[in-house]
Length: 386
Ligand code: AMP
Image 1 (spheres, rainbow, N blue to C red):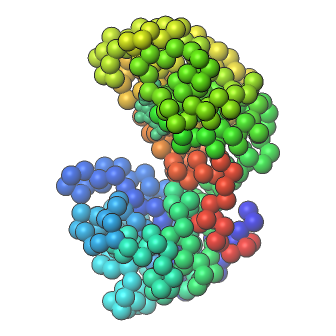
Image 2 (tube, helix red, strand yellow):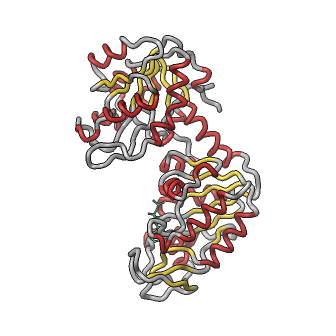
Image 3 (cartoon, rainbow, N blue to C red):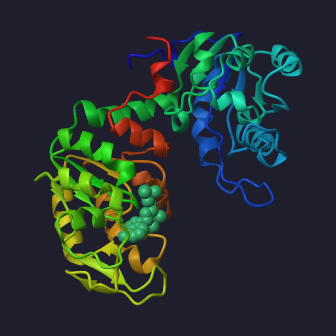
């Protein structure tokens, strides 16, 4: 790490403003349906408590559009965190201002407070310097452990670093180490599997990885834009007309496309499925076919490093989940270093109960994609040097 880390930051008896990712999914009544992100922050939180810091946590939750909206309050998260830590967590009903300053200023060593949603202020997403300065008053040092928002230059990820000594938390460090290892010095053969709905989201990832990887296996909805670019029939499959020219340019012997497909007449779970090599006009491709699975698994079995971003089919529908499942199983049983991008791919691997059998499952969808594009993440670039 070329950046300062929490382990090297002096936190004893200091107010530590820590940006975490508590953007948890909730049901219609505001109950937390998955507390993975809260749990993922526990190592950073317990480290500060153990070392006698006074912890002031901040996060965003949902998209309240710069206004105070009780639907997006972090109060239930404070409660959940207190249960997980088995100690009190003071919930502060504003993230800036005199009341918040008073409450956070009164914290004692080892005590924990959680500030209200930083996105209740429009200035947060604008990375407004005045707002960042007010937020920075809540701490004497800053720790960013929110990898999932590191690709956004917001007041709570970048702005505050102008005012406070700033370090990476352990979750951030782990993510950067796992993803950084892929780009810097991967063990070879290094294979990427890229899927998901849209090519446009992943063009820069394909461009960057085609310089680094030995093989790129394409699946999912994005495969059809590539197949069409080669003049092959894609029937009614999803494809992006705007990206067709780019797809034509992206051809490289390293890039493999599906050779057969599971197709159906409609985008529906119960639409009768069949396997084809050439997609008929009235069918759409919804999963990679068995021959493609076999080719891809053969390549993956010989890999020393694998990165996977994007499901290779509509895995939410069981009839079209076989390809994604086969790849997940293959990686779970592999001795290779296996890194799973966040978002849908992480959700698929978790659904299959295989998360613990991967080397690393990223907590940040957008952030991991931008990292794989070879871009420096603003939230990381802004941290103090090591
Ligand atoms: P993304 O967010 O771009 O990674 O896309 C993930 C979504 O792509 C998932 O919800 C999948 O259901 C969807 N997907 C994967 N394969 C296909 C396909 N062949 N046709 C339509 N959608 C697909």
